[in-house]
Image (cartoon, rainbow, N blue to C red; front, side, top):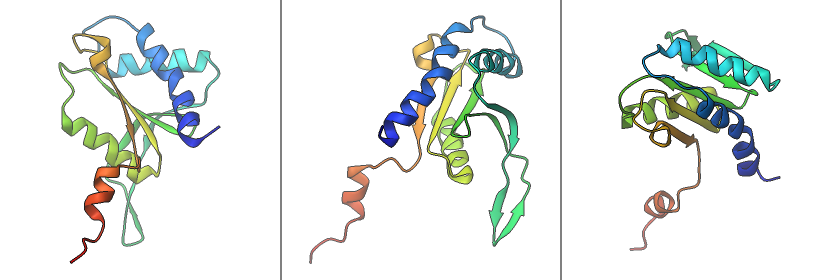
Length: 140
């Protein structure tokens, strides 16, 4: 199984459980507890509010970052209960992925107008041919 297939398969459990949690107007912490209950029911390893230090000049700094959920030691799940996801939320999750040295993250917003608008899979270090092309040295 390729790496991308493994992460796609691993992230399918949290995604499927996201759809099963209903109700608007709850706090993020309530949605988190519901999702943890669902994932543990599948006998998946789930860590909650995992501290994420920043390493600066070989010194570990506790900046107060906490990962909402880490599933199977591979996938960071960031839970939101807001009207609309913004690009800053993508950037936040991507920063967490980079700091934690993880490849896949799920951004789940339980307050969006439609479930399909409340789900995003973010991949760290995903090959981007356009970015690679722009970074390549140009011939004189």
